[in-house]
Length: 572
Image (cartoon, rainbow, N blue to C red; front, top):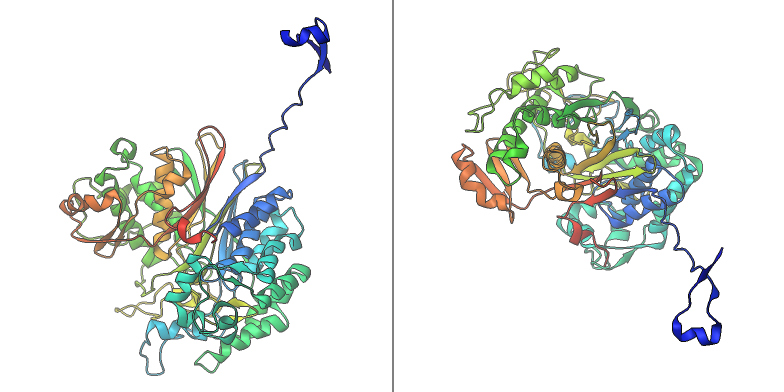
């Protein structure tokens, strides 16, 4: 449309008193919101964003991230391991899927014991076929995609295939991990071939590396589906690799791999100050622990205390101690043992559990509670700390959230490789001793087909109005539920953005002591916490790596990566 405009006076002589001037072009419309993604590595994050831009949804994006992390973050997660998938929709529905690894059929409670009944060192157990569970991530991705995916299956693989085939640049995160764990990272010739230089040392920061074997594996799965991973030559290669490194007559078999299934599980949900919190149930302890910690803290006015008050974090430590006491005794694979999930997360139980917590001092001791449905004859296990893990999250245009945590357990898992990827050491998440000192069986003992207990805590949150507002989780073994609960407290109680919430100082109870994050204001609160009864205090850098996507006050969405890893994951 043309409109009548008055020309500048200097031009009137030549143009007349008035003229018809075209309307200046309208600015291009703002791009419609397609969603956002959070991942530990920016290249994996871009893989997820690419799916959203192509019209995919949060499920598509999360799967593409998991696949890309197999390439660029091989020390932490990938298709040689397993994971948990939590999806929360705008209508309040929630789905949780279990892709945790399983023990071979031949595994028995004495799986890790030496012939004389003794227990070898953890390192011996880890760097052997005994530690490898049947990988679950491809089955999990397939199940999630068939139920909720929008883009073609093969499309989700393209960013990961390109990274593996064309090469990617080693960042400081991968270099540091490969240097610190060089023996595991270079256990096999295949691992050394692409990750190590001619001098046998890890490829330097800035080096472009190519993983052609992984590219070929991903391309075949993209074309033919999960069948080629769980059956045929690729499954047999995994089984041969694991069995050859297993110091027992029977190890993993191709039949163990072909029998694997990902499972939909009942979510674990609770409420906190009107917000609905949902996460993963057994075999994960993470969802239960997050709900328990928050439930025990709800009677305290943390907002009034504030995020820089030592009393706030003292209360947080006390709730952790009680939740983890329950975790050690009761939580394992619910397909094999009775786990009193409803009793452990019942509001009345948590209120009673919280009663001894005092702002004025530390509990002298903690013990497991007696929730409804609790088995009586149980013993604590001797599970080691978990390590290598990656968390990622996505939200799409519909407001649907996906929170997905993936792991191969320790850095570079078992060190064994097959088909271009590292194989997990998840079976060391079982209690290597099947009984406690009193002879009672440990819930998290090894059994054939069983899934080891996990700390992973992918979580989705709805606000009091029922709107999905946060997908959050973390890496860092037993610290994961603590990181996740801390982020929710920051978001809900203190009104922090997702980035600010996951950046809060880290504090955690370990046995009789506590750890304070070095370089934060908490370091200066040590004396106050000591006065509250926390006598054994260690100050050190925090071994944490959280991630989230969350809704801000203005309705926009923010992607958040833990500030502690930002420098190390930058691509040179």
